[in-house]
Image (cartoon, rainbow, N blue to C red; front, side, top):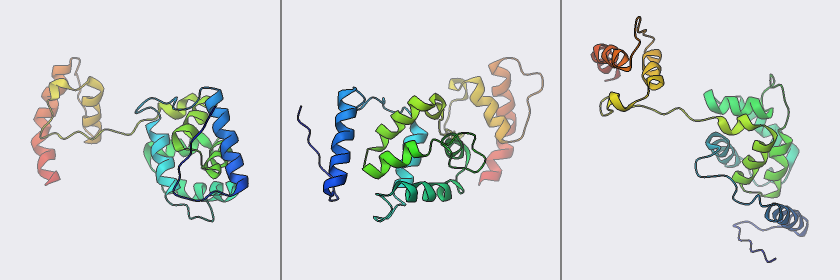
Length: 185
């Protein structure tokens, strides 16, 4: 079995050995490229964003990565904050699997492989999704799901009393649209 490795940074003999062993393990167990496109979008997004904040002295040290990740998590919101909570990046986190992220990251393992490993520890990590932004000027409300229509109303802090059908929600949004379109200008 032959492996090729290209990188923008140099590897020491020890870290090359770690990477090679890790790569062999992932290749052997069929874990390479096991995430589908768009799967674990929050995990991949957070870890990519976080890894860019690491300087060269921190990238090879799992304890330094963990400490920096906990600081990084203090400034996250919504789905990213939930991800931090799930892996133990926040004080109130119930589980602490942050080492499952920091060690492979210190070895130079790709982010998608780390997320795949985290997914095996806790499925809900890959269930997280970023919120979609809806442009009300161009969107066809009839093509949205009821859940998305309810979210629009919720974001506006409005209610739709007596709404049972999708058309009821669309009618309510159309009534309120001029009020909220003017505020956005």
